[in-house]
Image 1 (cartoon, rainbow, N blue to C red):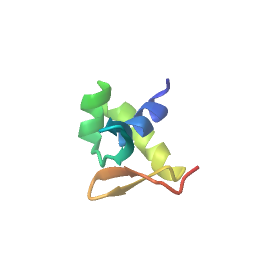
Image 2: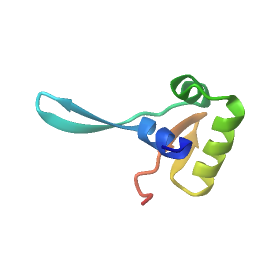
Image 3: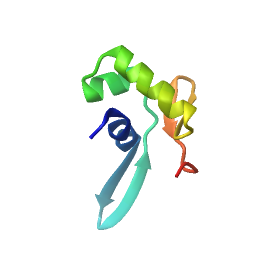
Length: 71
């Protein structure tokens, strides 16, 4: 799995709780992503730049959110 897909899957997590399937959207910072994926800052920075430019994520207050309108 490439890094962009891994990051997108970190921002949108599927949980099953009491038999109900729920999607949780997690706002994560670059530092969060570096820790979760065990990657260098430059790798995450380039990947997030590309994801923001293609419209799949957006950034508010240094937290990245998945764009639910992106297909």
